[in-house]
Image 1 (cartoon, rainbow, N blue to C red):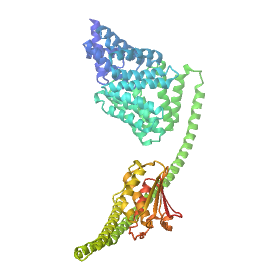
Image 2: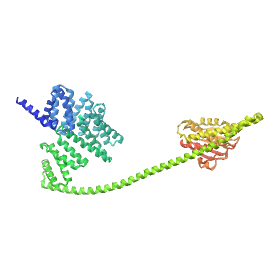
Image 3: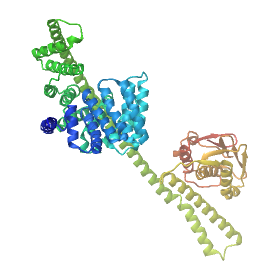
Image 4: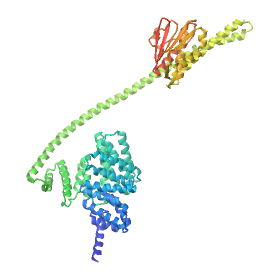
Length: 625
């Protein structure tokens, strides 16, 4: 009867003490009693305690008292044995590993985690395989010289398992482990940002009822990315993630899930002190920490960490008297673990340290002022240079546009001039001659009609040549020109051009000799090459006298055309093809003066060299591919 009364009182007081302030007690016996009271059914209790222990672990920023870890894990195993749910053994080993981590026995933790991993692999539990692989990598690395390789292998295993998991926290964990690996190997920026953004994506999908997991994920992500931001001088980003870390820790503290206030207050104070340099807020949270029971080595180490930070903060605020008191307390706690030193001497040393630090601080402040001035000067110079480059770039673009506009106006004027003059003459001739035949055909002899018809044909051919040249020129200048390369047989194209110009050749009784010493195949557009060769051969026919010859030779990488004319003028030999004016041929052939310009434009786009020279026989043109 008494035992039942005691149990009822324990349950009552545990609810009064902890339910009002904390959801779960940090006393392992009271915690177990709370769980049994909340979940009477053992099957449900087993499932719920598994989730609760994980939640408490994440809430406490991976720090649990060793006694709590051991007792809760043992109780979890007892439930497994009572319910026969051996499928939870993997979870038991995972929780037990937290105990070995808390006492820093990483070799034991590694053995336990491998057992858990084997069970999760057999059950294809990809969510827990993700966390086991990541934890196993960290645990093994403490006992292995090849630390980076061990961690990397397990981290990538964790990532592959996370891809198969439906849990967003597991997916985030898989991504941040790869992010850490990429940063450690100085990987490319795009890969780092990809996995950083993937981590953020899955963190944002973690629901609010899993706040401990979400906050832990934010803290871990920021710990991983912070050194990379610092290395790449992304100060604004560092400030943002540091504030996110503090907010996540504060959120845990305010939720009152588990009495880990000392640990959380210290983590918040540490973040304010080291990361945000907000010493006022750091002092507030460090003063919120209550002195623990100083019976274990770990509690003494923790309390000394608190006192050291408090000492540094008091020094920042120049409160030397209080700083000296804290220094004495640090000495008192540490003296059993080191050679005893006279507290007075230690106090003097601390005061000397304070004075030295004060001088260093003054020097650093002066140095920082100079650096700020230098930075401002560099910024002004750099900013002025950028503004100048932007304005100069805009000026250059405007000049280029004006030049193109002038060229377009000149092109337009030239086109109208050609249409009004060069097309008019052959067209008038054709109209006049055809009109004569219509009016005087009864009075004209057969020879006169044949002669007039020949003149009409000649004017028509001249008109056709002019129109063809105009079309080619307009394609180059008005429509734009696209370079399309295919393998083209030069001999075949030359024979086609000779056939197209057969009337002009026959009219002047010119002998065109093609010497194909090589089977020349070039990367060209067939139509473009045909235009080039037609214009060059037409030019050679134009200036070759009647009853003479034109020689065309194919070499291994060039085409050579030699006419029997008087040679090229000085402007063409100097390569000034755009300034060339049309001159009449040996049979009074007319042209536009655009043919060589078209040839030059096409050759330039296909990186083809064109050379003009005069020989004893006449003019010589060489196309080098």
